[in-house]
Image (cartoon, rainbow, N blue to C red; front, top):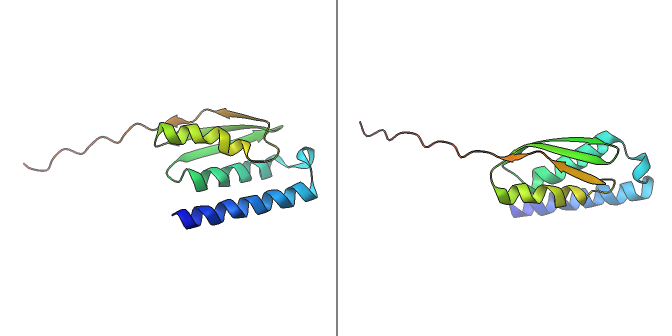
Length: 105
């Protein structure tokens, strides 16, 4: 829900502010970068199944999302995290689930 999303985004901003004080881009561990990007995406794209890998500031996001709108959100959301210099999106829109046959037999 919207309240939870706002709280999570606030938590992410607070963590980002702490990281800005305690270390620059060069000292950010890749695991921290992956975790922060993953959290940001999970909060804002709730029905996606995404993977996040980071190396030298380059983040690759794979998996599936339910819509083209969600797919378009990935790169800008990931770039909000300090230390992300480039985003490669390999995620795709998941095919719609087939409708089950009518049970009027």
